[in-house]
Image 1 (cartoon, rainbow, N blue to C red):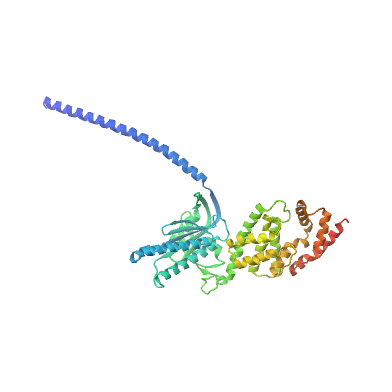
Image 2: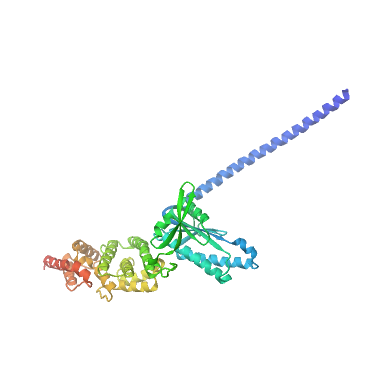
Amino acid sequence: MQESDYSAKIQELEKAIVDLSKENRELLKRNLELIEQNRNLGEGLEKLSSKINLESADKKSTRYKMVTVFFADIKGFSKLAEQQNAELLIDELDRFFLMLDEIIASHNIEKISSIGDTLMCAGGIPKKNRTNPIEMVLAAIKINDKLKEFQEDLFGKNQKIWEISMGIHTGPVIAAEQGKKKITYELKGETVNIASRIESASEPGKIIISEMTRELISEYFRCSYVGKIPVKYVGDINLYQVKGFTPKYSIDKNGLLPNKKFQVKFQLIKFDDLEEYMLDKMERELPKYLHYHNLKHTIDVGIQAEIIGQGEGITDEEMLLLKTAALFHDSGQTIQTRDHELIGTRIASSILPKFGYSSEQIAEIQQIIMATKLPPQPTTLLQKIICDADLDYLGRSDFIPVSNMLYKELHEQNLIGSINDWNKLQIKFLTPHHYFTDTANKLREVNKQTQIERLKNEITD
């Protein structure tokens, strides 16, 4: 190789080295920039993570022992392509979803999410109740019926586009509140996963429930076994289809409509939730000076009303009205003692519609409450029963401690003087008093007369 060729080759290599050095410096500079960006991103992620953790900490999570979770999937959107008025039908479907929301709300069910054609709801949150499995099945039946009616109105009886598959399961969940202006809920737990799996395995038009839900509703609804499905981490679970109401609680042979007996039975179950709500309200709001007209007295009147009612052979619906009136008869004391019966009727009229009471039932309950106003002048059997229950203690063995609490209540309000004055007043009240029902007379009249004689012996002048 000639010297000129060596010289050219060296120059070429030197140029390559310079180019590589320049490229290396640029790469090093770029690497430093990337390191800085990475550091900034790391700091940003830390701040975001802290914010998420703080937001998560702010979320109020509550564990519920018994919640019924419902998944539904609207199927049939592929058929819309075959329709000339597809856009109009989609608008109509929006109208159906509004109907669906009304059904859900009417059964105390919370809509958790609605994404596309999939709906998730839960019964038993945020207010815990014992009726959520029954109410969820009732809602599912109505949703099925409403979709059928909706399509018949659009297309007639011979055509349908949409179908709905439903899955229901009852069990414990953890619910986390989300949002500030409008509270929504995020549900977590095995119950949610099982309900979702049931819906996936469900057939359109059928209400498919788990064995747990079936155990809670089987007294009221006919259910048939449909098979098993595997659930991750749980194993196989049995599935059942809800066919309708049982013959005992159905108005028709097909079992598709509930009768009056079911409505009353359902209200009696709901009464437990109403009772819990009212007793909690009264415990918080009753004045502390009410040593007699307190929570214990309300509970006592309810128990005695039920005992006397059973003795008098009243119906289930009459028992419901009676127990409800006993629950509200002293609720007006949370406002004031004077005219507390009338105030109690107003409290009842504001609360009872939320628990499914009709206007006719509420009106009768109000009349029963007003019958407890002294002097009692009951006209109906239920009014007589509550009057006897209200003054049941007059003929009981615990008359002395109970009457002492009434004396203490009146004395602290400067409504009665000495204990001797109180005993005289009691004799004046007890002597003309009489129980209105045969049951109360048999249980209490003899001991009441004994108490009158005892009081006479205690009077000092």
